[in-house]
Image (cartoon, rainbow, N blue to C red; front, side, top):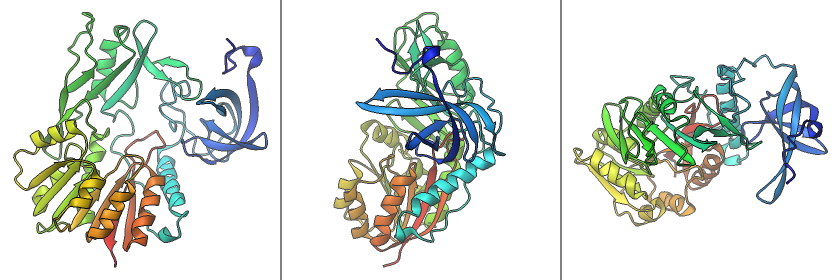
Length: 403
């Protein structure tokens, strides 16, 4: 079969490109063949030589590029510390100085807001830097190939890259990786989650190889944030950057200005990080979550807190049926943003204060536009670097009901 990625030397294709702004996947864009091409490993303004990849994916013809030589470098270019950078596409921005990464994230968020007239003039603050630029992730999902080797597959080339140490992963994950490497041939994927603050570990699936020097197949692990312990089961969501998540919780609390008299609703509550830590500053907390495992984790983790009510269900459905008067609201939806019914319910209940936590600038801007047209004012938007060396952006937006 013909290789769609043209791996034979005589079929390689190269182009000299002047690089433009950052695109949706963290790559930069460039003019190419009467259109635009996405280029991995470049910085806006650079002149580069790039290898062109033409392939078919999901029944669509695709063209991408990877920088192989920098002819005119950007002043923001640095030497990537990871030997796998470029071969592995898990980090998109290791070649960019960290201060410039923060500037880019603010710019990307601001650009998304500018697409909506209702968000004109929103104060987008400078990106809050992460406590650690490397070794911060508490969750890794490795691909397993070639007799038990663990690694990642390149997003563009789809080539498997064996990884013996990942500079984004917490040290406990790299320790687990060392024990699993070349010993996990019985599966195709391995998930490793660790308690960054506890050292506890969850490895899935259960592996039977007797040469693996530790247990696998745990159902949950324990993490600690802001002095509280959280049980996190394998299917449950938990922020991948524990230290930065603690700062985000503080920020949400500051924006909501809780006095102890409010009814707080935590929509998309997960295992209860916001709900449990902000409960002492609230009269009552209603936490809504549709994941059965997360609700079970939360009920165990918050059993000592008397003013939390956990409701299993979709946020859009529960918010519609709430009888309580809501004073403050946390919205922390998945990447796709809030369901339209959830936003309708918010505008009907009209909580005075909202903290919207987002991991996707596009869906955030879309939802904020709807809320502003429904009577809310965005006080401030704070981008947070939850994912250094990548293009991903977390943000907390503070809203007040203006009528």
